[in-house]
Image 1: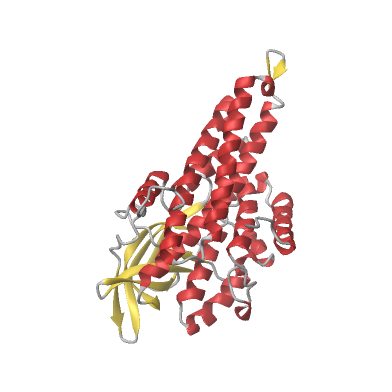
Image 2 (image 1 turned 120 degrees about the horizontal axis):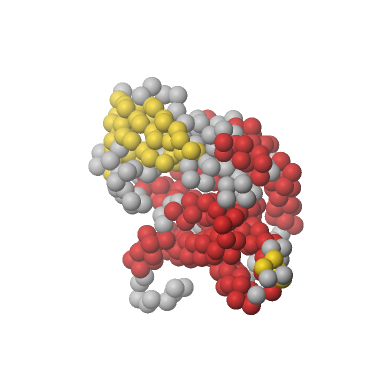
Length: 371
């Protein structure tokens, strides 16, 4: 298999990297985190690069690209630990484009692609514990439309988004709806998150909703799988930068008159971290390449990838802090923010233990990982 990137993909990577280096400095990120964890202007800059339309078809004003291009972009955003939730835009684009009726696609996808509208997935509930079928939100038909009632937790940028993709039970099965944040009966309570981003608790009380698909479970699973693949790619970028910061520190900090990098035990520790870095990268590639596979194959692949990425994120993050010493958890030092981001990503869309259970449950005739 050819793992080389095309010229267009490399140019895309270069454009995003230049934006991160020049426009999304660590100082700007700290300011955004201090102001609440989301900056509409920064999100608009991502949209100006065309990134909000990455998954949107060209006839709806997007770039019509695929999972590999998304992986390239998310890696670079991970290196800059960008707070604005582009992965949520990719999820919304994939779900609306793949499952929504034409009227809904025409109404929302051009606005998503231009950055005018931010649509996020609001699927988590307090009792769910990462289970997608644990949904207590209810939807009822009202005249020619729908009303949704329920509570959703940890909705990314939920008090800043323009609309939500909300799973709710209708006639005994899970359907998927689009609910505008400005609709009557919608309340969002925002708060900062561990890594400096923003989330919200969203309350829906007979909120007007538009049906995306009555058979919502396949769409919800696909949405989460897009999120997992994006999270894996983002984590690779965070790991890459964490490794770079750690190596720079070991090559600069001196103890007993010599740099820390001269101590063999610490070099061995970096070698172990490098192994996890490359395992993470290979499994992120695997996730992106399997994103358009048949459903069962795709779901198995995402669980495998997220499990391995979880192991790598925890190993690299914790060892980076240990190799730095006290400075590794100091707020003024960039490395501590990368550690927080790895901690947050390890929990997103299912933690490592959850996905270990998923891998186990989805094994068939053999325990071989790639069988």
